Image (cartoon, rainbow, N blue to C red; front, side):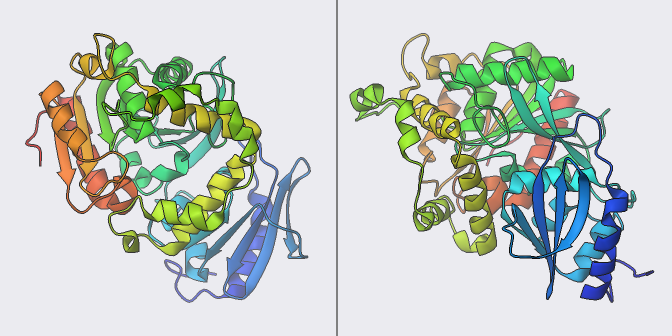
Length: 410
């Protein structure tokens, strides 16, 4: 068709491209297996792309419920087809909206060949560590310094999509669904920081990386710290965004000790409106985030929540965050003082979960840490302030690689 950068493209052009899509269907060895109905929406055009054991086919919508719906303007679809743009980049730039299972949407795109015209290239793999199968998004130059990103409680690898394209320009990026969450297997276990850190360590064994940079948000930050405490020789630096940490005040500790994670099986249905309201509360100014993101995040959460084992894992992990021992020689804060790898911590002054008071405590316990408090930020900096977050992480990781991680905190 000869269009430049998606200009002058209409719904008819998108329909013609979709009819040719099965020609590009080339699942790679080791790619995550997928059975899905993906609805492509462009203006008034609606087509279902079905992927199953028989291959790939394109169908007109016949009322069947899709696993995921992806909406974009014709020019965006053309840019993706031509390889100038990936779905992740389009999503991060607010040029594409996803509803339904984000995990299946991420697994879908790499199944198709496309020209290499500068767009992000990535795969989603199920890496078998011998302890679990971890759904992992992999992007960037295989020879670049590796970065492993870990999500928060109830989240998945999709919570990092806003910064993956920028990080992948300089690093080999692995974005992991921790066991019990997202597309990863859901083994029975304690789901405390040590349990999850052990799975991350096993992942490093499988990938062959002897030394990595770690990034974590919320619970993922706590797990990243645990990996660095247990295996400092494997960690070149730790970037923690609003990391969970042991609470010194735990007024309902006896009650939480008695609670059983297995009770999570009973909570099969959660009110959607309540979930969206809770998500919005995580941001200093939820207006910075498009409403479609909240809808997509809840879709993705509920898609996982249908699994009884996922509900048990969530409840177990939440319980262990609260039970994390703060005091004593084996307590979190005493151990944190021994953290050897360079450490960056970012806190939001308007975080309702991990308050900015933790920033002062980290600075006292670990004076070598670089600690920032952002006045205009809540609990998820990489989504509320993606440009600022990626710039800080890239700068910190570059300094770690150069052996000069210290910088003036702010």
